[in-house]
Image: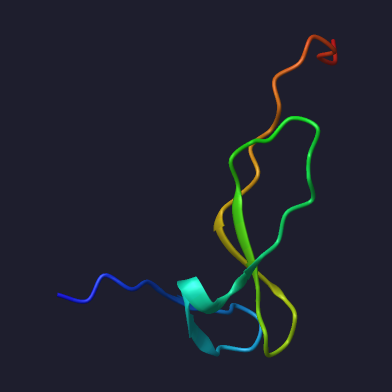
Length: 61
């Protein structure tokens, strides 16, 4: 069985092996566990797991 994950870029439609892609990380002050890669063809974002909203004390009233 082949365990490789193939991801397709939503911008250009090209498919890539997940292990060959560069991960895009903004080094958030509070990591939310997102999983985003950069497409080597068009440099667009391939979002596997989107950023979660951080839970803070400063909630709008």
